[in-house]
Length: 467
Image 1 (spheres, rainbow, N blue to C red):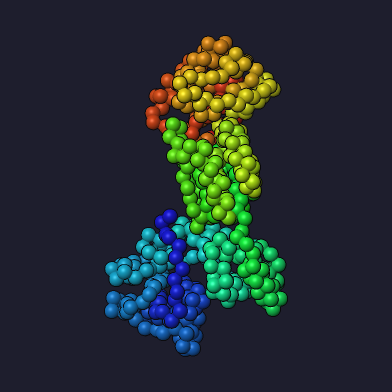
Image 2: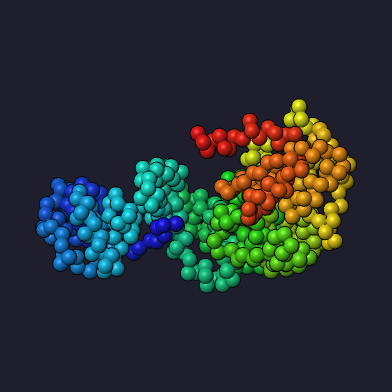
């Protein structure tokens, strides 16, 4: 993030605009919305700015820009049609520690003027960091169409009662639940439609009911987030991620997915890397129960699907025994997502009429307790979760059980993510190819079967990137 989004209070603050043409006039129109005191420095003014100067809406210093004309502004806009003048303005502003926006020159700017959707007091600002302003405007147009104008009335109504809500409901979770009910219910509908008297009465009644209510009941959301690509999240998963008071997550949950969790939710890292668990599973189960009994909405994030080698069954057994309400949200399991993004169909009429999922996690003594004769079947696809550390043993045992040494196999690292890597080979050489690839980190998935050969024709993702 090159430009960090910050809203500035410009009411009655001095803003310097250098330039008197149409470009400067467009910037001045926006600044008027912030009720700033605007000073224009330019040899000449366009008709629009000249009219504003006559009406006292802007002050005008009729001269070319120099450092003596800078003054003590809160914000500076360089909006001339002369790049060298704009760069001079930026240089002076930066030397004095004042934010400066140089029109059409993001490199010289320390501030960006965003595209704005105004539903005051609700304001949405969009910026491409100066890289694609037309795209930012298109996104603004989409939001303009989807965001009812009445949201400003709803926000103003909420702001008027905010202090009273804080006094009436001092417990933060109770306040949060109250506002969620308000914004999801009939109060919001009435306010947005313009029926403010009815909305105000309903809001007062809702606050009285909330004051008399007991501590809100806690709940656990057991959510599968899929193999890693945030676009593969279900709508329900995304919605519950925004409701959580606290989130328990594994280290394998990628950062782009964690960024979608409610910002003020407490985050607890419970580990779950191979051979490195921050919390034992029994402690995680107990923590889920304890947090829910405190009235919190607990989000338990799982890579892939909670019930596919995710120990979700153990967690809900504990929750059911403790009488804690919970929801389970399935996710796209890693086998399906990673195989699809690698261009490897798990079944195929000519090569595999079945697919078997197993875990390659070894027992405490380091051995693999699997039904090797059943797994070494020619007309099926074998998918091994958590098999990276046991890859040499897995390949050797499958050959010993009857599969050919040149049987196709692939190892997918960080499947569906931008850093996805796919290493293909045979049972007798895949471990060596993985070792030769160097230090590859991240979760890995092993696929064994004739379907791996189809990757050469079915690698749609690589074809899309090269198009």
